[in-house]
Length: 90
Image 1 (cartoon, rainbow, N blue to C red):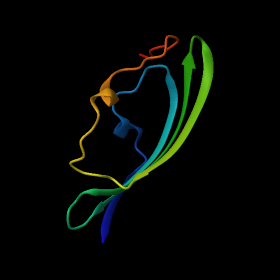
Image 2: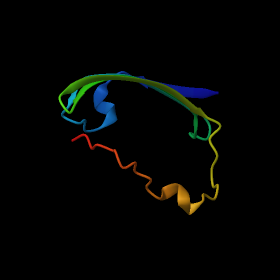
Image 3: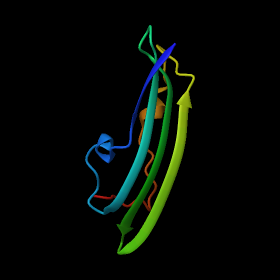
């Protein structure tokens, strides 16, 4: 048995970069009603922004499931690997 919540409020994404002109989101979270642990997370995002004076459009969809708890993680997962051509959006 699961319980779920859905939002389409862009504010659920936290503070947004000022270059964003449009942000549409649809987020769904399903949790086990007994344990209250996540079972399934679904996301759809569509955004329009300006980068170096050029308009860009981005879309993404994702699903996360098969969560694991109390699993030991390799420390290398938390080392930043930033590409040399990375451009920060403020």
